Amino acid sequence: MAREAEPSRILIFGGTGYIGKHIARASVAFGHPTCIYARPAGPRTKPLNLNLRREFRSTGIRIIEGELDEHEKIVTALKQVDIVISALAYPQVPDQLKIIDAIVAAGNIKRFVPSDFGCEEDKITPLPPFEEFLEKKRKIRRATEAAGIPFTFVATNCLAAYFINVLLHPHNPHDEIVVYGDGEANAVLNYEEDVGKYTIKVANDPRACNRVVSYRPKPSIISQHQLISLWEEKTGRSFKRVYVPEEDLVKLSQTLPPPENIPVSILHSIFVKGDLMSYEIDDDDLEVSTMYPEMQLTTIDQLLNIFLTDPPEPARAAFG
Ligand SMILES: NC(=O)c1ccc[n+]([C@@H]2O[C@H](COP(=O)([O-])OP(=O)(O)OC[C@H]3O[C@@H](n4cnc5c(N)ncnc54)[C@H](OP(=O)(O)O)[C@@H]3O)[C@@H](O)[C@H]2O)c1
Image (spheres, rainbow, N blue to C red):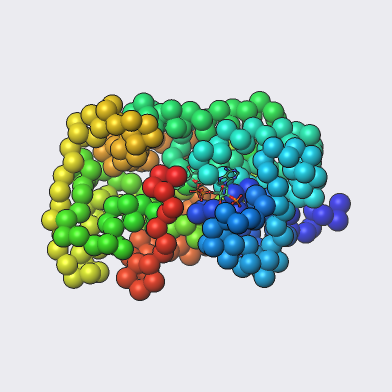
């Protein structure tokens, strides 16, 4: 009973990752006893990852070192927490079946948030390479449901700094900016720090139990043309817009070898078809900004200012 009044204890897989670090930072900032389950640090661990581990320890985040196939170790870790969030890298999405098995064995987990952090995969049908990518994530959703684990599935849409790097190349500015399709489709770009905060909030929120939560705040909705115009205003420059028509993206998705056929299919889904805004959020599902109207978001305008002064790091691999 005593635990009910205390902040939930959160375990994060992939907490040293591109989005995982923002989730871990938000978790500890909101006062949750937080640990991450990470591979043992060794000579091949990147300096960025080692720095994060130092930062995490200094803020009270506990690091449990282990591999994903160490079932007993994971079960033991799970027994000490209430909520599990996975932000594992895309290639490790199928490995989350091991986390699901361990959650079932532990028997105490009140919420599982698997590594989605993208589009609402149950509501869209993109080109085949992206469809196959999403099918792996859908399998984890279905396995979570079948195991009877309380869940929240998050459709965070585009991670904003990640996609601004892909679209505008602010680190390496050219005179030209590529526009996919006609540039008019609305996308949704949510700043990574806000995604971290929202994810901790929904993972703890009884309203989000066994629900899909879409992250679609109005200030995050923007087309490519609007984004480029805003960047032109900020930089005082004028960029030539070079169009890649839909048929070229479709052809590339059919001719490029995997996995290079995936990014073009993602660009087609988001920026040509407008998939992120193509579905209604129905009665069963939730929209995050209406759940927490008090939360101050970083707008795209503010994020572009950050790019001008202190640019966020580009992602390790595009569409990881
Ligand atoms: N919507 C978007 O715009 C967008 C953009 C990027 C990614 N995503 C999605 O966000 C999720 C997380 O992606 P990310 O880019 O943040 O991941 P990431 O940084 O590439 O990796 C996350 C963590 O996964 C762990 N990991 C990597 N390789 C592993 C392995 N072989 N075995 C075990 N663990 C391993 C690492 O943790 P340790 O080193 O601590 O073990 C790593 O820090 C994915 O579902 C991805 O599809 C969405």
